[in-house]
Amino acid sequence: MRLGWRLVTLVVATLGALLLFHLLHRQFVGVLPGPGVAAEVVSALERSQSDLKQLAEADPSRRAEYHERFDGLQSLANRLRIVDHNREEIAERQRKLVLAVAAIAFVALGLVIAVDARRDASRLQMLGDALANLAAGAPDVRVAVRGRDPIGVVARMIERTSDVVARDRQRLASLKNLAAWQEAARRQAHELRTPLTVARLELGRLEERLGPEAIAGEVGRSLAEVRTEVGRLEQLVQRFATFAKLPAPDRQIQDACALLRDFAATFADAWPGLALSLRVPATACPACFDRAMIRQVLVNLCDNAAHALAGRSGTVVVTLRPPERSRWLAIEVADDGPGIAPEVRDRLFEPYVTTAAPGQGMGLGLALCRKILLDHGGDLELLDSAQGATFHLLLPVETPCPE
Image (cartoon, rainbow, N blue to C red):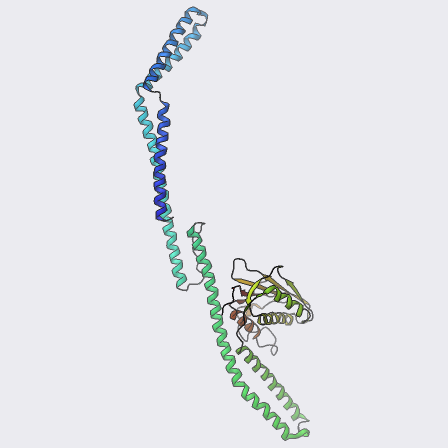
């Protein structure tokens, strides 16, 4: 509560206490009979007593009843005389009582306001400390402040901002890491391409010099194995080059539902034994993405799921989750395969980390997929699941797409 509002509340409370004092004072004092009224009532009671005496003389059989009523009137007259005699003192006592009640209420309100002000000052100090930690780059900033008032709202905003900043920092670190790997892959491709070309040319010349008869036997089989290995190395170099020269995405605002429907229709029978199941909303879900690149990511994830099944039948469920008070649109790709080994979970998106058998993969597929999502301003995450593997493709929903 701001200082100005506290002062307004205090002034209003003061005026209310004064008004309450005035009303209660009039109510209590007004009950007391006035000086003239008391004398008139006492005179009427004395007349009634005289009448009761006459009735008792006229009707001796009811004398006890008349005597009891006479005593009651006598007691009431005495009380009125006492009240009339002490009227000012009673009024003063009532005035002091009402004033004490109003003062207690006013002091209590002041104490409540003071405690509230001290509490707000402490909460604001915690907000300041949280903002300082956020500015210093502390991860996962949390504020021990709750409530629906403006301070509580700001505390929740700080925590949400901390989550967003932490994710953005993680994305930036991943981008830098992948950029370093891309540079390493570019250098490897550059360094290996020339000697591999020379090796292939020399193999051709050697075969020409030996002639068909010489290479028909054991020498020929050795040359064929060398040529096969050279071809395999050339494929690796090509993969290095593809990873190193990943183009920037051509992002446009498009309907993600239409993308997934087209993907499911096109690749429904692409993987034998692997069934594609699609769950998308009926309404359009616009997002900012490169259609061809996101489809490539989906193909890579489904291809990995098919390899993990190792010939067994399985299902990949692709679910589109629209953003709910978030800047992300999520595409969930979940399979029912054997899942990801715990020892590689934390390094799954690093280049050259793979769960495939030796010679069946380089471990660049998921790194390439995540680089595509990071270049989109989104991310690729592996979620914990009881069975299989579940990936989240996070796409930004900015409109229009950033340049």
